[in-house]
Length: 139
Length: 184
Image (cartoon, rainbow over all chains, first blue to last red; front, side, top):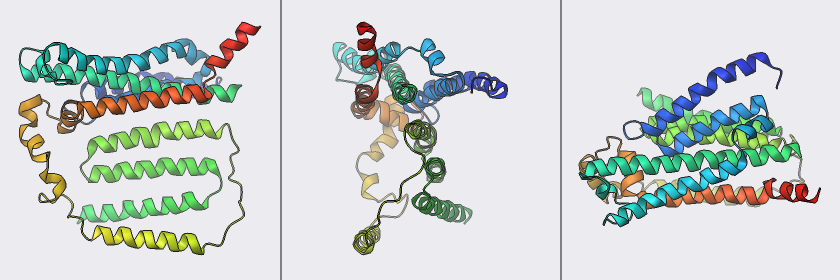
């Protein structure tokens, strides 16, 4: 598909929009539908589109597998780390109310951070799975 | 009235898609029908006012899993092979009995949105009345998922992470290739 001009043009136009929408879903999950899971999936779709149009080798140069693996671990660590942060501040595991001065502000911070962890893990795991399948095709 | 009509049409399409998936042997068409099936389910979730679930279904069911199945299809043949068919009587009886049991089970199910249903009586009233005060998050689904049930969601993220690691260990080429490069 590397020489298909229209496809390349449309993809280049669409990918930033998809990423922007993923970020909106990620950080607007408190107010509207969505959250880390959906945002992670949408974010990975942007990169899958990139891979389909520009090829696996180019995509892996942008996002190497080793980075994806680190990101997947990082997301889970951010989530679990938030739990331990609440423990250290004298609360119960994953009770975000102790993270800030007022309980609701703490809840806001906690939810934002763990949703970020969810998003990072989901996006990178989806890409890991996709790259694993797509890479097998090449061999 | 109009909602019932949309319900019936969507469910009819769902059934038609399911039958088509069963009958068609071209796997590419089957994958596309899977995508349509997920999209129809997402529309049904919207009608049930479950916007978050609909969102997930549309993104994961119609989006990612279609792509993943296409990637899998590239590794195999695109036609399902005809297997010698058994006599359909035993499966038919099993399906019939299970179906009757399931329909019998629905007789006792409370009406949709019934506030007296046991599922609405347990912790749901507390979430609805105190959710905004406790978390300050207007989207109740996010409040329950991320705050009240934060521990469960941590488990879910771990499951996804484990799935990724599992796929990587089974078919990831990273480890094998590195060994090849060392050899050469």
